[in-house]
Length: 429
Image (cartoon, rainbow, N blue to C red; front, side):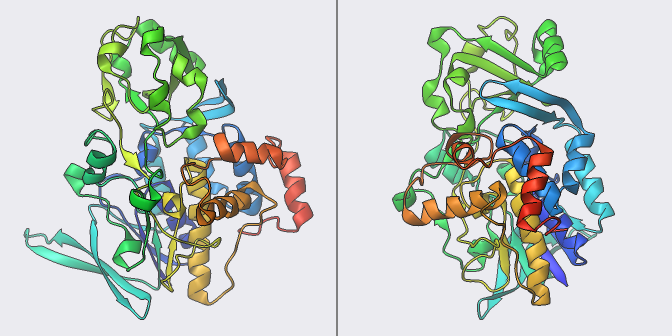
């Protein structure tokens, strides 16, 4: 079985690993020279309902990739405004760890593989191709054939969308000017994607945080940050940015405390929990007099724009309109976060192999948060209600639903008992 994954964010890495675990020959194509995409600047795990989702995933048999994250975790059980029992992984160490993990699983990782063409026959995706050069520097087209494909190309950019819906190219970690714009496998295969703008206006949102180089901060602040994992610094009234929070992709952090304070988390860099903060204002705050943004480089003005193109899919992560195409991560819909991407990626990777074998596809049960979030989000989109919302286990609309449905629990025994009562322990193992 040949499974081809396009895009190597958390969803793509998860899909590739679990497809390989199921015995497939897996090729992972990444347009840049690093894995993980926005996972290179994220770092937050297990906050609020994400702890529940992780425990469910582990009991279902898809928890192994989380152990790699644990190996480079800087802080555990951190509470910050609106969020409990978070862990923070080191964004400077996570990529080599995941790269090693995938290679040991037998995944063929191809970097600088910017896919731009596809061959489709009778609603079946046969191959995708990217441009490359041979050892002599001559241009060639590399064709990658597969039995099943998985689209995890994300929804951020390209630059023209950042200009239209944001504040221009913020020179973010996705590096479109260097490696080319996002090109969706679903779009290449002829799928009519759910696009921001026009009738779907409101999906688009800015990435929700900026990284500050620790070396540019006051040493005593850095020492406190590295010891406690967080800083909460009250802001002068004139610097409070309530309007910027409404633009965040991560609505779980769009609460009053994040407007009233500078909230910094230690993920290796100093993670500033706002989509942008004017540098001239930041440098007026004690300890930040020489502050410099590490990502995006234009963090004083804006950040990357996400949720620009999503693939219509079902609860098995199967893309509608193409017989052998699955998706995961943000391609599934306006779903936010590493945990969310890892779980949808795992489901897509496992189901891609099951599809190649002609087996029945798995759908996660709505009695669990990991299944309910997918069903609820798709229902909201299809009904036209709540299309401006973003869905996450960690806060806002969906975490409120978890609380209402009594799905939230950070207790492993509670989650294990729930899954055993459903008779699905190890369902995805």
